[in-house]
Length: 406
Image: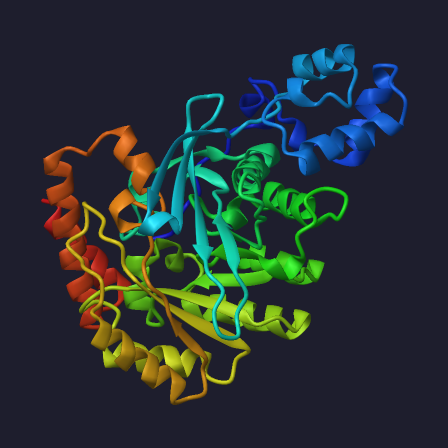
């Protein structure tokens, strides 16, 4: 079964509302200002206000004359993704923001604070969304339950960062890392993601070093190849989750289009071309992908690669029958990877009490799915995962799932 991406909204369809000022490059802004009879130096003033001064509204930008502020407000929005709700967990170390966009769509960002320790500096990392919803449909992810709504515009991506930057500035702090691991598949909105990365990396705009930016994908091979051709120096992360195709077909449905060996081959070429280590993310699910057989398959798949594996206990999601792998299973899995020379980190979960996993808060605000739908999803996943654990080929897994739906 092939995975067919849903149709994308046209730029005209998305731009039914006023575009965001932060989505403009210096050249585009200068062109707009010239059309409105403004001197060239105003472009730098506007960008400084957008990216450096952190005012909450355009009215607060007193470096610009009032008539210009009025004209800008008529053509652009100052903020396309202001937080409508913020939930705090882990004693203030995790802050999840729900952002409501102009068309009513909701997206999420998560701000995580890591204190300084032996051999490491204090970090403030923001996880941001690139789409409203997601078409990939990974069953352990709450965003997959929401389905796909639309791609985000460049301003809607970077305004999540601007919100967090303003938030941190009140305490004299600054973002140190940005990861594209929120809602959506970044490489299915690659043009806008690249524009956002350019803005975040640009010293004249946000000015964050490329090596402090991570772009994640569940395995869109053409997108990985395109990144490699660009020679991008940000970190590439692969949402791996399983090394056996029969199981990864269940956990990451995109695997049916681009099998895991093809994904890893593209990532391997990317590492060779850029000299940058690839990060592999593995959500660990008890009794599903944390077995010795799965660890050995992953060790064999990644052996000798310029790679780092992050093992992440699954956050509970209502429509799945699964639970996070226990600590002993994580340690055993990590040991088998380390035995072949792979660096491994076991991550702790953040913000479980506020639904900090991708899509949980947005899914909650969208309304709980019907109990019958939840029961059906659980039954389907149980049957599919059991077949995959036996090593049944995808066609057999599909047949089992079809029978479970009757």
